[in-house]
Amino acid sequence: MITVKFFSLVREALGVQQLDLQLTHEGMTVMAVKEYLVSMHGEHWREVLFQPNVVHALNHRVVDVTTSVEEGAELAFFPPMTGG
Amino acid sequence: MQRVLVQSKTFDVETEYRRLVGEFPGAAVVTFAGYVRDHCDNGNVMALELEHYPGMTESVLEVLGQQAEARFGLHAWRIVHRFGTLSRSDPIVWVGVVAEHRTEAFQGCQFIMDTLKTDAPFWKREHLDDGSACWVASQCQDEQRRAQWYQPQEEK
Image (cartoon, rainbow over all chains, first blue to last red; front, side):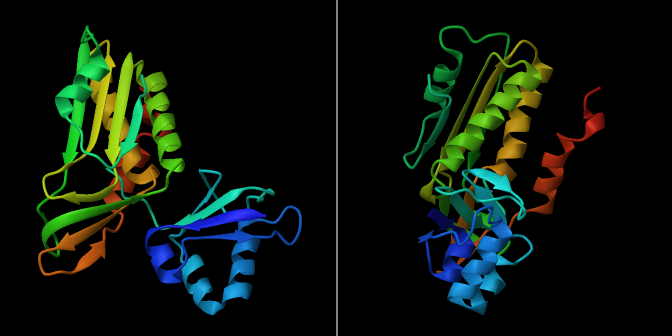
């Protein structure tokens, strides 16, 4: 099981703040998780999660979509950050 | 002393300065304070909403402070950043650094500000006086400023 979190515009577009997800196989990548989420929730999720500027953070570190997601991880999706 | 504070309540710059320098100011101290603007491209700003990612925010700011410390030989540094709903002119962020010389102090403070704008997981939404609200888009120039710190030829 992993925890998936959504922030800002991504959270608003999906209408979900957080969900738990059972990984389907070992070594599942961030990209595979995104595809899995689309398969579960519909094509609208593809339009949101596959926007080119969406940032992926795994256990509080920004990663690319080829990174493997381990059991118990926290994965987050959000738009580019605007701090300061 | 905790060097990173992420909080909804306001802060006082004099208090933060004293916490940074302690009894002795050191040779060179540079601080930056950022406040909520009263206007943006779309109109007059009444309030600023700041969403953040608890846990990741603190760890990113700690890493950026440590990078600045190592890179510019900082003696001390401190970052305070707010989240939640802020009114115009409210303080948002405060960064203070202490170094041996002014160049390192200026650079260390600017490095932290330039990198936290694009690396710390905050998202701003401006509420305007016409009742509308819009998310603030990331700026290309912010990415460029961040990138300048990581260019290989930067170390001269």
